[in-house]
Length: 379
Image (cartoon, rainbow, N blue to C red; front, side, top):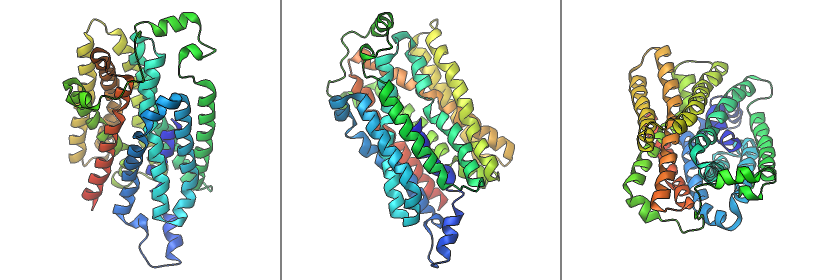
């Protein structure tokens, strides 16, 4: 969650950085990057570039040192990028791009860890619940970050202290994770033999060190469907994540304080939906697993499409806010169906755990696409 908080903070604080522009105006008459839509959007597009750079070495690094050390390494990168961001803003757009690149690099571990932790630590019949809970990280991050950013922007401390707070909290979270987590449940001092037997049941013969079968993944019809739903869900997610506060503040006319809570509301609703959806998926055994996965993915995508259509035509502020909140909330259900489907297909097709983790490569595309497309539309 800390990695998501670090990355999401700029989505809000970019609407309350006017002091930076005013400071430059006293020294020069040139255009500030905050007044250039293209440069502002580049700060969000570069996250996808950083995530791609972070994804490329993640599989061999995890092969070599395991998730525990890999997550700690990526978490430290995120914390450093966040702590340096206020200083980078003073130095200029290029330095800020570098810090955002670091945050994007660290983001690569977030999606991978959901699949890896679920695979190693969940009881097989409860994997849907594990996925639902672990995938709440971006929503919890938004629920925490947006009101906190609003409070700092309105306070005498200013927006810079948000980054110092998040950076220090990230360091603490990384240390806590490193101390408490183990890659294998059998190496954890708090796991009993009974728990270990339950976790291991049905996972015999799994290997996490096989080469990633990229060709097989791309040619498999089921994995193609997973990639398509993931692309659609992530495109919507990144639009809401990066531009939600700007939309709420500029288009709907909310002030800074209201924007923080209005932006956090749909993510709070999404968390509630996920806590219901995960156990519901695992316990609805009267419906075949195939149709449960289709149902969750279709519900998520269908509601988002309807809400986007409403948003494109809505002139009423209340209607627009309801459509925005519903779209962002139902967006989170997609991961329950898609990751579960990928894991089931992995088992039946004997694709390694790293094969599922490699889906992170494709996650970068919608983030870059949504940021670039928004920039073109804005201009």
